[in-house]
Amino acid sequence: METIIIIVFLVGYLAITLEHNLKIDKLIPALAMMALLWAIIALAHLPVFEVNAELKELEPTHIDEILLHHLGKTAEILVFLLGAMTIVEIIDYFNGFATIKGYIRTRSKTKLLWLFSLLAFVLSAIIDNLTATIVLVTILQKVIKDRNTRLWFAGMIIINANAGGAWSPIGDVTTTMLWIADKVSALQLVEHVLLPSIVCTVVPTLIASRFKVFRGQIAAEPEDLEEPKSKFGPTMLYLGLGSIVFVPFFKTITHLPPYVGMMLSLAVVATFAEIYSQTKFSISSVDKSESDEHDAHASHSPVHSSLSKIELPSILFFLGILLAVAALESLGYLFTYAEALNEAIPNTDIVVMLLGVGSAIIDNVPLVAASMGMFSPGMDDPLWHFIAYSAGTGGSMLIIGSAAGVVAMGMEKIDFFWYLRKIAWLALVGFLAGAVSFILLRDLVLNPM
Image (tube, rainbow, N blue to C red):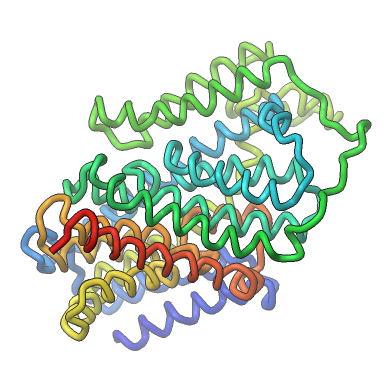
């Protein structure tokens, strides 16, 4: 039965990678794979387990309980994502990103590459790599009209957003997991991982800046095609980004999951959006009898309009992938394979780097969860910091290896194999350069023998 389950997962994963060849949206095989895996578990009455990180063992549980547990964890991520994406769309509703666009005066592709790389690195540490990618790709679509050029920029944003999220306790879901589990403290995480993350950003960006696609100037936008500016645009931009930054503070004070704070932030932003738009609040009711499409759109609230623009296929794809991997985790496969890897390779640095590579292929969340059961060092041991770096940046090597990549893939319709050919090796070079700098920093500076 284990063979059948692995085959279903591999076939589903292959169908996702061949999305453009098969002409089938990636969410279809993701959802089918998830449903089939759990159906096999239920019909075959396979035993399911929950990882006990403290005892480093698998504890038997019931399928209903473990499925509800994984659904809850997945829903936390998806609801958080929905809130962040809606806030971004509300900002865009008022053309708020034109404020940032207004500061981008240069038309040099090389300077734009470094500018977007820096913004991705910094923003991801503040508002998490997923939200930062959404914001920057949205701005990118307004600054660069040529799609081929834009794809290259989007690929570099993914690399740099993941690098920026690795050194912040709120920058990536895996670093947040380690932070909440008291494996790392915020200050020590920054001290150990900031420099390797900078290296992981600078090296691939420096290499890419020499590519022909990043040479020359971008085409000037005709004056008559400039988007109309809203007087509330800057206000909504600062309010929206500020509300997202507020979320980690809300979590620290209340100890509630991040999605609760995101929903509060969305409520505040939506309130101001409704006031500024001077329309009747309507999140679900739409006058379907309206024949004039323009008038019908005008009657919508900013919230409803923003919700209608969200990439729901990406949300459903994320749901399928996470629950499919959760099925393998519940069967104990990931935990068992991780322990076998640890026994086969005594060098923990190599094991952690392989976990980073594995996070690009599967998903960094269950791999980090498994690593928390594999290793038993105390809080702020360098091992945990290396895991935070590897899991956070390793996902950049495949477009579906990180949440930032999945969202960018949905927003720009990036082909899996295009990313594999053009961007993956840059991400690998950056990952290895950062890993080497981490080891040198740890052994020669922070923890000399």
